[in-house]
Image (cartoon, rainbow, N blue to C red):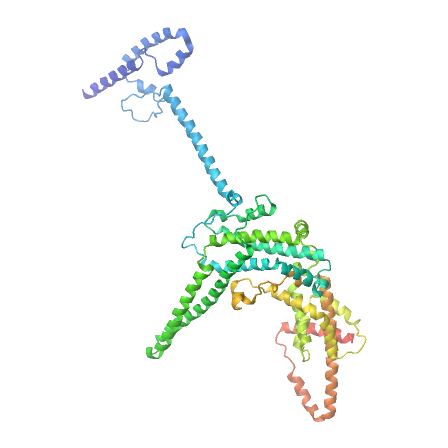
Length: 567
């Protein structure tokens, strides 16, 4: 009974609801047909309504089946007996408008997101309307700390380049360096070529300095300091408004150098603190195995010294770059890069444009690109060391020199031994005086090459030299690469080195003759000393300890035979 009554009630509900919604018996899909059929629609509607009434009496439960596909309900879903009807035209148009507006809103949101990203990416190049960086407040915990030593080293590079571009240094370059014998004989006598060479060097140094500034900027949390390489390139090419410097670059650099000096002091004090802590740790370990009474006074003194040193380190951290944030230093470094670029253009003028188009001239014949600058400097320094000695040249020094000769110099030296002659007989002092005429300008070039190769690359290497690092404020003690073998012509340098080797060989031969004459005179005066001579000579013979030493001795003997044959 319950099942039968529920069935009949469902049938009544379905029929009454259908008649209530469409009094004429029209289904929703027939509304579309009536819209296009005009006058023929009423007759078909009446016929269809009578047919529909008959179907409803015979098949009262068939309504949900016909509407399943229209209501977006799967056939497998359970039907709860409640009829569902499709949306009206107004509801469909509303949902369609909602989907279109949603798509538009989504596209607008994507466009806004892209615009924000573009703004962030171009913020470095656009900055703001006044083309200036905005310095925000320093957030605690964003200090440079251990990175301060690297920043200090970068600041020193910028300071060195700024000192070189000063009026005094440029005057010194043109009036002293360019006309020196070393530059004239080894590099070039053409002033324009020398200017192009120096301009290329300084552009390279600026590239290194600006690259480090770009790297520091990318470490900042503030995105305005990111990708500064794009900003520097646009400033260099004039593609954006020239940046207005906040202050005098030289005054700003002095402020940075003050921080650098405190950072150098901090480096030294941290080294002292590290040694004290290691000593304290060692004393504590020793104290466990010894009497506390004997070690008490010593440990107390060490603890007090360690406490004072920690206070000193803490004070220097506040005064140095250690406690500064990267953002606090970045704007000053950016201004320094822009200023140095402008100064290089102003100082070298047309040479700057020539270098940017053609690069450094005649690099294929230079010692620096060939990787021979330091090697040739070492040979010159060995010759200078031998000549400056008051004692005769030892066999070890001779072997060391001959083994270091490159093949080109060795072949040239051998080929010129037979033809080398001195017009008049000279004693040892006269030969050394002749060699000093060349070594007086050749040795400084070799020394500068060694200094430039071992130049400071870390703060500690110049921090350990004491207050100020022994550096002159005008920067004249900075080594220019044009004063080294880096830009020296390979053929010219080899010519002077071979000439020094020939004179050195003549010096050795004259030393042997002088030694033999002295020995003969001593033998005539004291014939008893002849019995002791073999034992003395045996004591000076150096044993050959390995196969490498044997090879060196054989090569040395070959050169000596060539020298003796030339005599």
